[in-house]
Amino acid sequence: MVDKARDKAILDTGQSSDYVVIGAGPAGLTAALEFVRHGHVPLVLEKTPIVGGTARTESYQGFSFDMGGHRFFTKSDAVNRVWQDLLGAELLLRPRLSRIFYRRRFFAYPPQLWDALVGLRPRESVRVLASYLR
Image 1 (tube, rainbow, N blue to C red):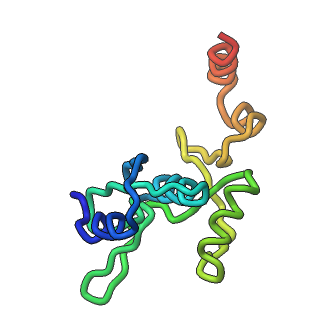
Image 2: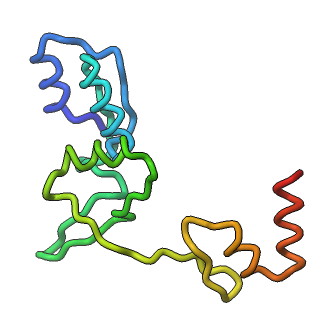
């Protein structure tokens, strides 16, 4: 679904859009922001009436529901700066312990080689390493 108000806003600038961004989740909005920062007017297409993708929060009868992951993990200072600049004080930093539950054991997330090899059975560790080397 294309938002008519958004289309009208683009038309009102007197500029046409040579760039299309599909999806208004975090990645799509970041791509659109980069186009704007480089002097381009992108057309952002989103099938739902609310931006945010699966990182959005919906409200229903006074309750808030997270539709998906609201956590960002990156080792890129540039990506962190984008979100800190955009959200300012609204960016909430929370310490979290993320783990993968696999075959009745917990593994570190993001995965760490030594943790995985020690946590897996010896035979499976050899298979994982062989698969990686292949």
